[in-house]
Length: 306
Ligand SMILES: NC(=O)c1ccc[n+]([C@@H]2O[C@H](COP(=O)([O-])OP(=O)(O)OC[C@H]3O[C@@H](n4cnc5c(N)ncnc54)[C@H](OP(=O)(O)O)[C@@H]3O)[C@@H](O)[C@H]2O)c1
Image (cartoon, rainbow, N blue to C red; front, side, top):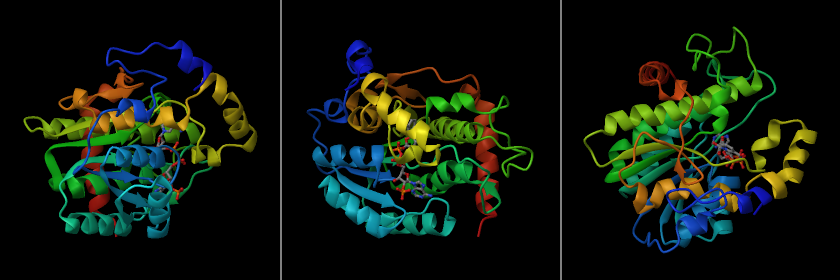
């Protein structure tokens, strides 16, 4: 718990900045529930999986390799199913979808947690900027493939970030997804996180009239392996500032667990949450027309992938 955690009051939900994932799920009985968690082997994904498992849930644990998922399940000490899912490889994501569907378990939530941040130089995968491709397209394939496996009250939780505000002025540069017209590390991360947010919004629109929901989350600022591409001094500074200004991993996983499992948000959809309460995202993130254009473009991209 940092100094800021101590100073910030709880919000209308009764939870706030300093709430931990264990506190946000205290008293919940998730026995018989099933949660898919991507990026389960590190940082917020590991803590999310641990805490939902602690409450009795069965976790479908996704990591780049089965070995990583298996080790994470053991570390978190939860019951679960290990599944390989390399989000930047469509064949791997499709195989993960097939494996999960074959399990025949109704899914209570799909938590799209995995992500990479601020690659210093442009990297391409299948012709697309890697953060956009991994963080958005990989999850787009996963979620659209698993939608029918969701329970009637199933939830989709997209890990976005307040860094979505760093996206380009036009939001998503649909004509520059290969970075050929310019690349900035934080701009590209912001664009990818805005894509996560807009995807949740477009999905929520498709869920209207059903009991299913889709929301996006800002977990806070937390020193995790996410800083791996930052220069080492900035990474160290991040760690040093944590006791004063940033969240712990336990606090960082709280909003995800709250939105994925808490009864308070059972019918909330199309929203952006931070500190376990709704937060207003950027203007671009509220642009329903942009969300639809991104959806259409994503479908076209996915259809053309090997
Ligand atoms: N930490 C923060 O301050 C912060 C702030 C705002 C938003 N977020 C978001 O929170 C989420 C979790 O981040 P974190 O802080 O927990 O970071 P982290 O510790 O680096 O964890 C990221 C996870 O994503 C996985 N991943 C990365 N690339 C992947 C790929 N191509 N295929 C499959 N899995 C992949 C990583 O697997 P490997 O370990 O195998 O690479 C790891 O399990 C991210 O979406 C991030 O954008 C974090």
